[in-house]
Length: 176
Image 1 (cartoon, one colour):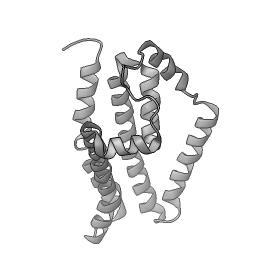
Image 2 (cartoon, rainbow, N blue to C red):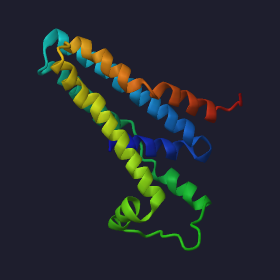
Image 3 (cartoon, one colour):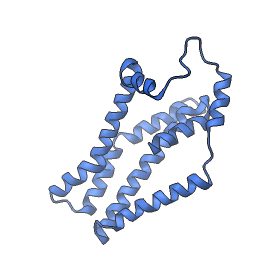
Image 4 (cartoon, rainbow, N blue to C red):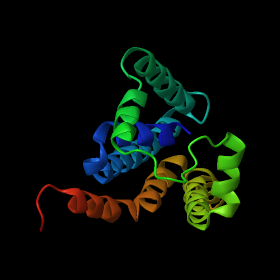
């Protein structure tokens, strides 16, 4: 949920011309941070054990995120409203849907939105394997905590770097 919120905020701030670039930077930065955190928590756990030290890094991230949210992050709703005013709703567009109607449409009745929702679910399941199941599998096969960290990072990043390079080139101000 938090990651999705950052994507929406960056889309609002970037405007229509640079949305792809903003999302690309967000994805690249996010997955690099996840990989670095995996390495850090693996090193912490290898040195200090599984509890509680590796979890303290997560608590520090949460405190930092809360502090930034309270003191530095500003609401982007007005930027989105200003852009929406420039692009009036098309005739016949539903502008007053309830949350239940949106959930029904994105899950069942609109095939494109349903496909996007399913793709997001599969992506999140893949991440759950990377960060939840694989560490257990590695441990069951005798790998130490220090040995499993780099493997999790390598697996999780296998398709991310080419994807981000493509996004950056597609949105670059120059054309190759």
